[in-house]
Amino acid sequence: MGKGRVEAFSDGVLAVIITIMVLELHAPHSPDLGALAESLPSFLGYILSFVYIGIYWNNHHHLFHATDRVNGAIMWANSHLLFWLSLVPFVTDWMSQNHFAVVPVAIYGVVLFMAGVAFYILAQTIIHSQGPESKLKKLLGNDWKGRISPVLYLAAIGLAFVNAAIAEGLYALVALMWLIPDRRIERGIGH
Image (tube, rainbow, N blue to C red; front, top):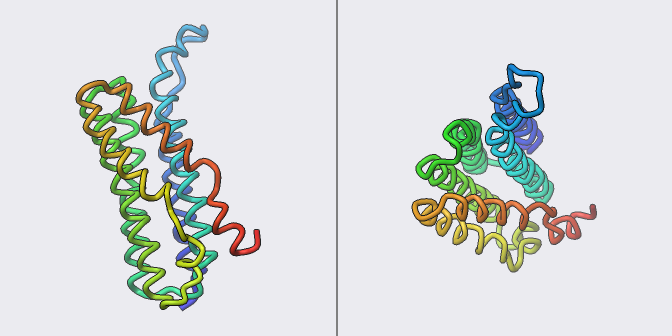
């Protein structure tokens, strides 16, 4: 089966996720600059989540560029990833509306962790379906970011109960690590 429909569907879901997140941003009811401070938690949560969705969109694109064909297992693994990403607007709003309180910050990390796990499962499902000479397997090689990200997420989830700001900093650190597209795949697919 061709991969175009999976890519188009995923692009659509990710666009809807970003749209939902931006609709959760509300303009202040006052025209003065001080009123913007009230919206700052929501805006900061939006920025972090927008960056994460952008990272997943970019890496999803690269993943499927290195994929020759899809099957049912890949489609379900992709749906699993989209499920976790679809929760990002909810946890972003919950975290922002509660001014980055402990439990919402920790649950935000759980969703990020599970999205990372789902992305890993998707990549492994593609590699398995493409066979031992999988183009993606060759391109991924030593995936240090993929190995350290879950550790940082789990640390952040635990640290959220000690200091939510530390957890938020770790979430931002992981996003910064992934902000630059994966050059291994770009080089391998000729971008």
